[in-house]
Length: 445
Image (cartoon, rainbow, N blue to C red; front, side, top):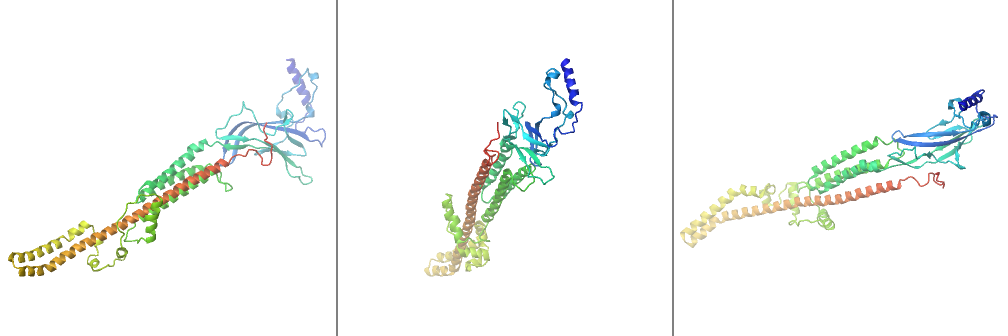
């Protein structure tokens, strides 16, 4: 009780003529030295879109007030007195986004000292600090900065700046964004294992992958700042995947267009045939089934222009478009009638037994036999042209297969090289070893 009475007496004596609005300077020209120390207790979050860092900190300020001096022997060895901060003068230090500022003509901001060493870093109490699950603190330096000299009659300003250099812990983004994007994009690469003529299915799969990547890009865009000064690596990678998927859709359309060509609409140039049917398959180690003899150019021109290539072609212009079975049934009545008439005429000569009658019957049957021979030749020619037509259709399909394989290799190389390049950029996009380039000090205890 006696101790409390001495503290009360001391407080009354100190506050008797004390004015908390006056600066504790014995002379008007005196500058108050204020030491600052910042203790970080929690790195709560970083709102990247708003570019706002939320933390819990303790700011410790020390200064000397000559009006609060006493002799402990006069108050029974009371050395320490704790009073509310509202009762004493406090330096009017403005806490800005990352610094504290005050007029240099009134106080002198300094970093606090411990054990004869200036504390040039943000202090972290290991017992009170809570580790953040998304961000890791790499550097936490503190600097005392002076603004450029002020104009005469104006007070200059000084600042104590506390820096936090943080780095994202990548595991969350690897598991939830990067890995799904890589796997989904790999599905787009796998469409090249579908047949060359399955262009509709290829486009469907590619567009579905494109929509999935757009959803991921939209989610990332909601978190990054709306600035054009820098683009995050994750946005660059998602944009790259979108470009690759769009190229795959374009390749599928081109391959489908080539695979569905026919002699009716396109004529295959010899250079295209040589490159895509002989040179590239040999280089790509593709197994190509040897096709029949190449269709003559006269057939291709005939199919494209609708003109006849000769008297036999003029007789049956629809023959190359008809299946062999249909053509056989169409000409069956004509073959049966010609053969029957020829046999009847030959049989009449054989029944008589005379050579003259036999020669006469053969002479009479000659037109019918000739007609039979012409019909057989026409059927043979039609089947030959149908084979040529099928061969050129197959050649276009083989060109589509080769083109599909070339696009597959190109997209695989582009996908893996681009992914590797982005990951290499991410590997070198690290916090520097020292907080300030050119300054050898580590700003650490």
